Length: 140
Image (cartoon, rainbow, N blue to C red; front, side, top):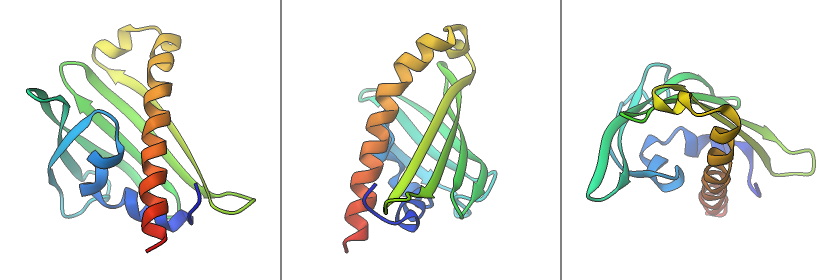
């Protein structure tokens, strides 16, 4: 990403921005005041109106130096564990790594190679959106 790591980390620490960069999140209903402290939650809706599911994403761990681990719920589909790592890129800018996998629910019944095949395009777009917003904020 063509911005500094702190630009990305500030965005990750802004729970109200979640729907702008996370593919599939339709709206944010509330964000705990403590976000992104471990245990804090975002209440969100996923899907397309009028078929929206209300659920939550909670922080498993947060290291403001470059690591956010989340547990996203979207029942009845299940739950996913998401890891975002943010590091300076050796050539300038920022490198972000995102790892996601189903950990509960029907998603775990799908073989891992098929889950990955479905998640990779979604997560590429999620990271693209994250980059657009972080890069824009860094120029202000």
